[in-house]
Amino acid sequence: QKEVEQDPGPLSVPEGAIVSLNCTYSNSAFQYFMWYRQYSRKGPELLMYTYSSGNKEDGRFTAQVDKSSKYISLFIRDSQPSDSATYLCAMIDSNYQLIWGAGTKLIIKP
Amino acid sequence: NAGVTQTPKFQVLKTGQSMTLQCAQDMNHNSMYWYRQDPGMGLRLIYYSASEGTTDKGEVPNGYNVSRLNKREFSLRLESAAPSQTSVYFCASSDLAGGRDTQYFGPGTRLTVL
Image (cartoon, rainbow over all chains, first blue to last red; front, side, top):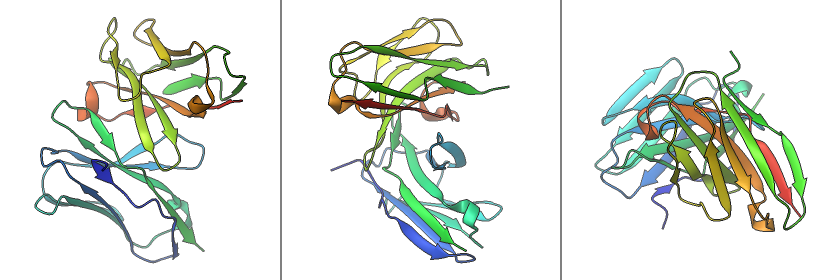
């Protein structure tokens, strides 16, 4: 079993919809959680970085962490075609190494 | 300010051939990383260099070697390529080692081993 599980998708939604992307994890020692966005044929780029349980908002993006359930989410409001990309979750283990999810491919249809 | 650059962008090798992937960053970062990305597998760390003069194995180091040439440059070498090494390779850099700091990625090298 992988330490971090992420549905690979693809997830296809109409423009303007609210998108929910999720990851589950098994290691209760994870404390830092990140979402990276990767456009096709590009390298990943950091989108959101959270430390504790709860919500963090940045524009149309909200990152949510539920440590009790070992579950993190990324919500995208008013989704745009330019949001079409692969979204990777990542978490830091006790050795400060990044553990990556496999990524979810998101398609926003105009 | 180019960020992280990688060469080449594409490469096709025959089984048994060798090659070196080059990576350079101009952000004065201390730490550099090599990942491979395969469908359904996410990013897997091959090697990393926490600071100039040090290198350490990651999750999948077999079949690879690295050199931290100076603070800017970190190369990845395949001595005898195998079809299982067909992948997209990403170099990344960060100021602090590990995941405590944002990692900045290059555009990737798409390698096919026949």
